[in-house]
Length: 506
Image 1 (cartoon, rainbow, N blue to C red):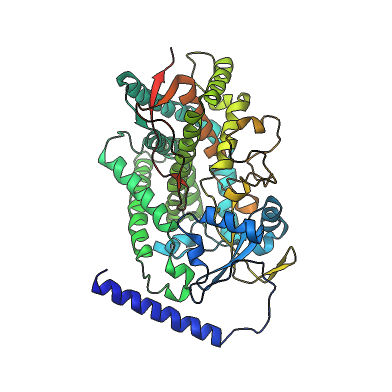
Image 2: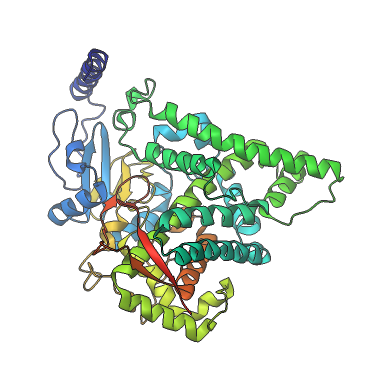
C-alpha cells in the first residue's frame, strides 16, 4: 500500500469514527424499536465483515440462525433481510405503501440517471406514466408480436455461428454468444438493426466491457452507501467510473436517435420502422404538441434505453449460461428437453416464440434455473418510507430492505431436494414467474416488477430451445465436470465462463 493510499485510508477511518461517535452521543430519538434479530454489529462498521464476497450466501446462512426476518447494521445503515415467501409477499404486496420505493445506490446518481430510471425513481406520477407507457405501448405483448420475426432471424444468426464451432469441433463460450445474440435481439426489437453485427469486432468487446463495468460498479460494496455522509467525496471513485460507462452508452443511443430523427425529417415523417424507437419518438413528438406525452422527452428516451439494454443483455445471457451449465452437467435432462422439442417442433424446423406454450419441459428447465440461479439474488433493494410493523417487529424509517430470493429458492421448507436441479418439480406445479407466486419471483413482483419480463421470457426460451433443438453439447476434452461456482455482483454470474463443444444433430 503506497503512502497516498495509506493517508486516504487513515483520513477515511478518522472521518467515519468521528461521525459514528457523534451519532452515538447524539441519538435522534430515545425511542427503543423492537427491530428483528440479527448478528451483533461491531463498532462503526457494523456487520460489513459478515457479508463476505458472496452476500446472498452469507445472508442465507445467517438467516438459518436468526430467522427469515433479520436485521444487520451495514455501516450506518440499518438493513432488513427477508428470506421467506410469506415475508416477501408481505413486504411487496401487503405493505407496499411503505416498501415500494427503492434504496438508490450512490452510483445510480451518475449523470442524474436515477432521476429518469424506472428502476430507481420513487413511486410518483412521473414513474406511473413511464410505467404505463412501457406496459401498454412499448413492451406489451401486441408490440412484441409485431416484430417477433425479426428476433427469429437473429436466432438463425446465432445458430449459424454455433454451426461454425461444430464444424471445427471447437468449444465456444456460451455466455459470450448469448450476450451478442441477446444484444442483437434487443436492438432489432428496438431499432430494427443489429447494434453489433460482427462478434469479433472491437465495438462488441467495448460494449460488453461497458455493460460489465456498469454492473460491477453498481454491485460493489460502496462506502458512500454504508456511510451516507461520504457521498460528497465518492471515496472509491465508483460514481465517477459509472459516469464514464453511462456516458458511452448514452452517446451510442443518442447517435441512433439522431439518425432516426434525421431520416424522418428527410422523408417528411413517412419512414416508419414500426419498432419501439418509433413509438418512443412518436411519444416525444406528440409531447411537443401537448398530446399527453410531455414527460417523454429526449433525456427520458435515452435513459430508458440505458436502463433496458445493460439489464436486458446481462441478465438474459447470464440465465441462459446457467441453464446450459446445468444441462451439460445433467445430459439426461438435456435429452428429455430435446425429445420434447423434436416431438413438438419436428426435425429441421426452427423454434418459434409461438411454440413456447407447447413446451412445458423447456419452461420447467427455465423455472428451475431461475430457482437455483436467480441473476438478481437480492432483487433491487427497497427502503422503508416510515416506521413499519412487520410480523411483530419494527422496521425503522429509511432502513434498507433486501429480499433474498436466492435463499428462498433453496429453502428446505419450500422445496424438496432443494440443492438438486430437477425441472420435473414444475411439471405438476402451478408456480409461475409472473409475480403471483412468491416462492419464485426472479423478476420481482408487485408494482415494481421488471417491465421487461415478457420480452426476457420470450428471448430466453427462444434461444435455449433453439440451441437444444439443433445441437448436442459436451465438455471440452480433459474437462470432467462443470464448475457451478458463482460470482456476486449486481447480477449473479458463473465464476468461470462455460466453454462447451456443440455437435450438430443430423
